[in-house]
Image 1: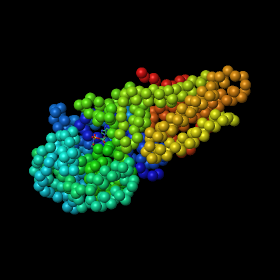
Image 2: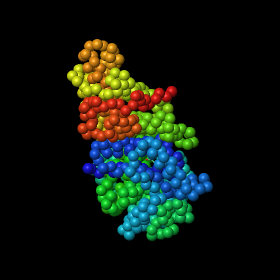
Image 3: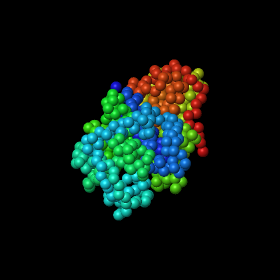
Image 4: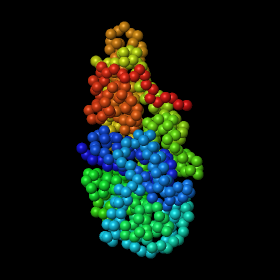
Length: 510
Ligand code: MSP
């Protein structure tokens, strides 16, 4: 079995989960579920980024300790993951001893190699971004207030991690590895950033300015800069240097949003890994942002979408379906309540849910709740079978290319074709006929629907895990599996008696 390791960004522990956090985890989850069904040994890591100034400040504002804040935010994020059916294997929190120990070990190693040095620095510091700014951070000659907040000049003695000696290597590496950054156009942005000199990275904060962080092992007056600490989660969680680490590193995908590619993931992280003599990640999967009517979501604009509100009202599968259907991975996408409602009622309720409930009802009414065999299929039946093999190929290819919205489009075209087939066959009319051929057609039509539903449920399992499992349960089948079970084979269901009288998967909501 091939090992597959995937990580998401670790979320800041200073706010509530929103659609952006939820989407990233759902996207990662869909990929991991797909890989598991394809037979890979998957390790799926997500977690919480708990240090830094923002966490310290928010805790202060709320009159609680930073650790109390992190614990309560962790509960919220973990609850969201559970509710959305996120099948992670490990949840790392950067305040955990397992992480802190490895950050300390790595800092010590890099300090000993003189990759980290101490120096006095005067620069323009942004509290919001928690870093010194550079000229190239300016847009139209100014540091954007929205991104950097108040910017002040400060002089400080700090520890720095050398970046510049690796610049040429990094440029060459990105140019030579076409698959390093997905989608490809994002690599250009990184190369653009690398055109100018890059300042060494300040990796410490004096404790008199910030105390909520991991203490530097070689200087107790300082804590580690939050990004340097956070990036290490990807290797600390799998036990850097140990057996599990060798089995899973290099990571297959770091799934991140577009805002944290440059410089953190595409400059700092590869250089940190290189300084540690570790192989590069196989790929970064950089997704776009969820917007609201084209605008950035923010607390002040009051347009933040709470994934739990939607998942509670419509069910976790419906939320998963919507974000995967509407987002072309890599591009931005707009969230709107109207679109959500229409996707829910029309795709899930009408097309898929109705097909399932009608088929169950007719199987109960005309076949005593037992799924018939298919004998002597005619053109309408064979057309559905043929369409399935094309759909399966296209959907698997789309999954492989991370084109999940396209996979859903194809799968729902197949579901709609079964609905049309039902209208053409009209089992309710066949049931009234005395012609023995019609009774064969009746059985065939319902068996085709059942098998089509089984296959749709199987291929949709990474995106709609609950609905797929329910469908499998009513057919009295074991857990969804792929491989030969993705082939059209009516024998899997023939003779099975349905476990329920009726089922409404996605009740209509106005
Ligand atoms: N803590 C850092 C990441 C450290 S990884 C070593 C961070 N946290 S975050 O909470 O601000 O963002 C977590 C992830 O959510 C990021 O990948 C970010 O791009 C993503 N999103 C935040 N808002 C988003 C949207 N509106 N839409 C989609 N994803 C966005 O950055």
